[in-house]
Length: 221
Image 1 (tube, rainbow, N blue to C red):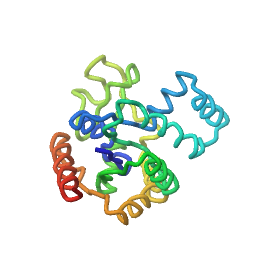
Image 2: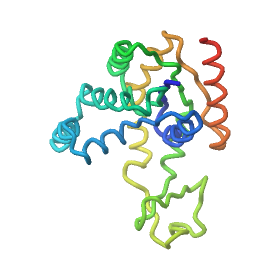
Image 3: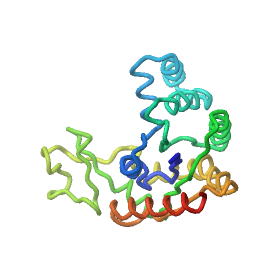
Image 4: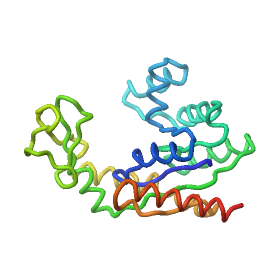
């Protein structure tokens, strides 16, 4: 299957992308991973992206699209892929359509993870990270440490990242509503959008997504 994953910050896209890609035996193609890989390998696209980033500028759509094109042409993506973080706006969605058309392939579904805005704020603003090891993550509601402010794993101090503050989260949501959310209507016009609730245990959300994608595939046969 060829899938685009969309949803607001805090919807659990990263978690579900990895799980769904594994279940469907397709590569998970994340914009963040694409940038990191190209920059670390010092590809021409990576050098170009880094020049924009070092200057404090946004990387142009055409660079992101070129990276995605290169990745989707790799052998492991021949039978499908799951795009996470791309397309990020309607112009990127249009470019993706053109790209796929030249390859004679189409998207199977656009999976929209729906979550109430207040829940997004609660999920992100409640995160606490260990200063010693950022992979140690806790939550003031969902995954409390045994001792407040102290990492269960190493005893390091837990803190809230600046970009996890409620004010920053609400700004990120505004950007999502303005830039990314319009692609949902764009893909609805093509009959590709499958919307599921991103509330509940992680396993349940994964199963919900797989069932919805299965129905979509059967209906479009």
